[in-house]
Image 1 (spheres, rainbow, N blue to C red):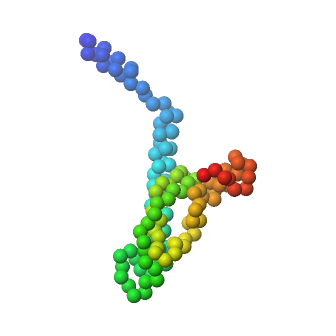
Image 2 (image 1 turned 45 degrees about the vertical axis):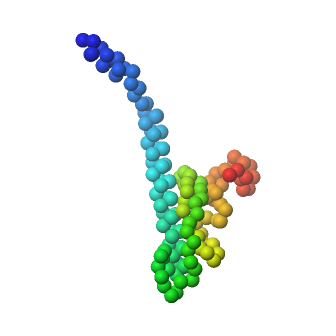
Image 3 (image 1 turned 60 degrees about the vertical axis):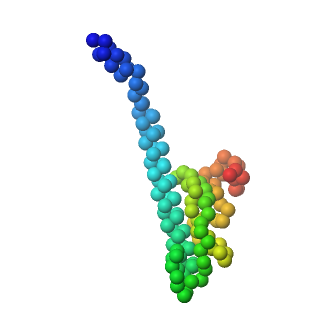
Length: 128
């Protein structure tokens, strides 16, 4: 008898998440998945651009090589789908990688800057 009362008391003490909490947790997990997929897509596109500019893939030995890779560097980029942290950007020994995904020192995509303009009241927001 005491065990039944204890079990029912334990069940009453457990907090059942509200519909709003469940909705928020679901959207946070979806945003995390989208940010991860966007990071993977950016890294694949950057690697393809590096392969095209170098004239050879990573660790590939060809006579038509134009540039030599020199590892990668990490950078963060804020998109409308969330922050992409530690995006791996390939680099070369002779000059930088030329691509059209983002500018060399850009920390936010243009659509995020456009959303910040009404908040800042200036043409290009100064907050990083």
